[in-house]
Length: 306
Image 1 (spheres, rainbow, N blue to C red):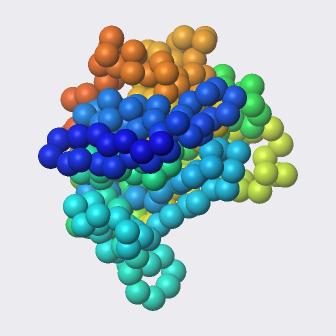
Image 2 (cartoon, rainbow, N blue to C red):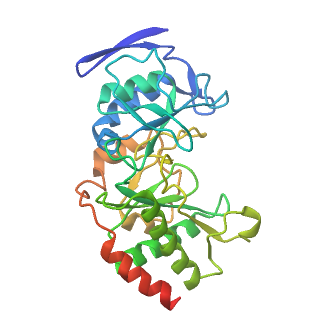
Image 3 (cartoon, rainbow, N blue to C red):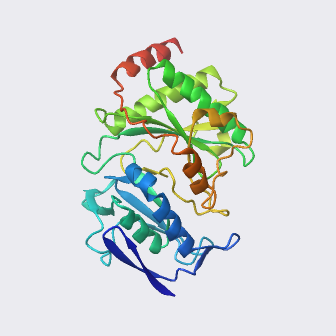
């Protein structure tokens, strides 16, 4: 089945829109395209300027995953790209960048279920404009642990003078974000995040760990700060995840963590549009970016006490 859609100034040829991408839920590629076209006004601002890695499933989520960093030659020349230094190797990688609704729809037509975004922008790729704590509970039913961890992370960051944002991941857990002013590089940002995690572990060693080896976590929640590195990516707000139910990574208001029904995969491709049409984007207006200079001084005092 072939069709076309007009998005802004672009006409995009669509293919196989009736292809089922989520077999248990009946969600088709056409549904995915329609979703990303609808959500684009809210999602594109979180993607602009960021190199992307594309998680594609041409035959649906039960088929082969294609994790694509380099832009293929057949992409139209109006798709924005960014050439950045290859992680751990020579040369550059040419990544896709989404700066328009049309680009997001084009990627959806390529069966890109999830665009994964860098934590930095292409004009200054070594200096992130956000820091992320990835809070993944130790079990499928462990969301209350992620909820508590998010609150503890927020409380400590607030004490350090840093406001934070929270979103579901579309998986089991939560992401806590801090918006940065790009004065620190990735090494400095990850060192800061590591210090925050160390303080939290020292305060509650039975609940939290920074142990990367799963066998040594002993049921504790892993405070994952490893995304804070050059070339690493995170799932951006409103991205669909390649999981049964077609869950969506969704920005939250902090008060929503009080809702006992909340889960990391609560919002889906079929429910999140109604949510933001009703309530708006909880992150809207949260654009002030912070320096880590003063928070570092306060954190060092806590690490010394530890």
